[in-house]
Image 1: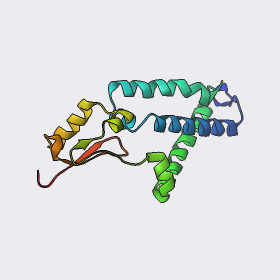
Image 2 (image 1 turned 60 degrees about the horizontal axis):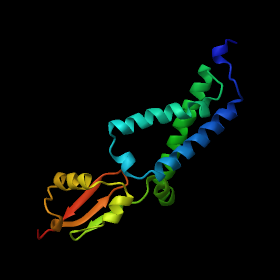
Image 3 (image 1 turned 90 degrees about the vertical axis):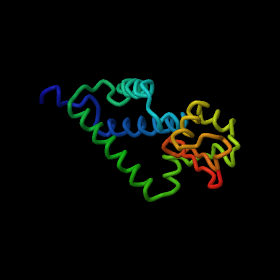
Image 4 (image 1 turned 45 degrees about the horizontal axis):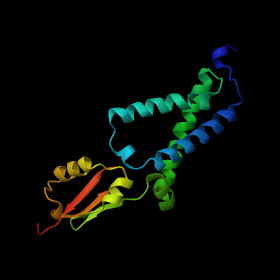
Length: 159
């Protein structure tokens, strides 16, 4: 058999490596906060590329075969589908994978400690206000950091 089709390790080791790397990266991304996934900047794209490169050897080891790469790709795609399927059916899994919305402001009172903890700058919060058509802090009824990293602002109906 040509070298490009010979696996350098047993097939099950590819799957085990994919499982380990997938869940460790998922945990690391969740710990980095919602904002890291909500709005991709050029720095975020660079981080994704570098993460892919950083975990390549952890996934492939010494293998450079076509079969090994395809097995890893298939494993990661199936794993991602399974996590999505479980998230859609289990609120507990969904909370673990997606997180929960975070209250940033209520009745014109901005929770600055929460903004700091969630790595939201004053400029990002102001931009979300402008995008929602809210020009004054006093007009905010609720401001919520959604699980996708976006900031939703509900304005007072009387203001």
